[in-house]
Image (cartoon, rainbow, N blue to C red; front, side, top):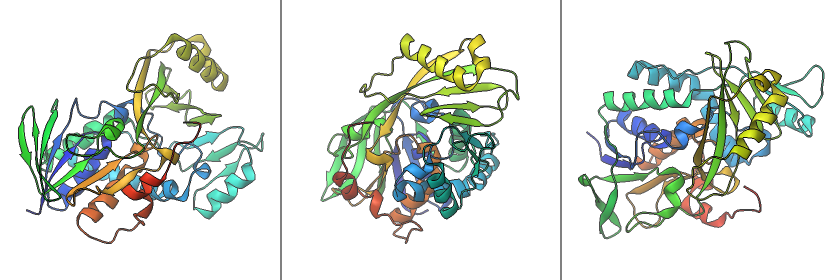
Length: 358
């Protein structure tokens, strides 16, 4: 067996790296502070694209587009390994009232993303290649795949201390015992900026709350993702429809409020009038690992040559999961990655700063 790895965090980011390492012959143990995949990996909508992909930097586009190109095969491999269905669905996305639609169409043509102008409103765009996945079911399939590949997962595992010697972490002491390894991966999501005993937090990562609603309709009422001015509706094949999401600087507070529920419901009804006659069946909030410009941190920790990070994906952790894991595992094995790792380095993260808006 190749080098062993301990991964902190068993959300989509941690599980994806675990699967990549296990498939290359490494031993993997995951330590999760709560339950597997119950933070932002569970709370999001599962759209497998940046919401307006032409509005992001090339660093975001490179990761997202590589993941989007490989996602169907990646999910198929997870489902075959796990025996569970993640509900990957290339349902397409309609973007309404796009500012500068000609620029968006030009970007899509340059980056190989199919886009067509809407027949009625020139500001509407149809992106038939955009897919989605059902987050909780992807997490369940990933977890099972990791276990079947030989990975070990410890839940409710709190880090208490790190054994450090000459620029290396030797082991992590937890409430469930000590875990030594050759390498360690920090994939702790919204908590990445707070650090761990003896390990500095990932720079400029902060929790950003998002509230969402869930409705239940008959299957087929909505057949594609709808997006307009920050609000999206995501249909599931069984008739559920998700509406979201907010961007709130609320620290680690995951509470919801009635005012936001009412606003999201009203805006969702403008997009899909049938929602006006029913009440949401669920309202929740999750904490994203926010990062300036949505650019994640993927690479080596500057203080320890055997510690790596995979975090800060902000709104697109599920979207970027395959390419992020591929990049990190290549770096851990000292292989030349397909993507340029420089934009995702710790140093690059130090140089980025938050603007006035989330």
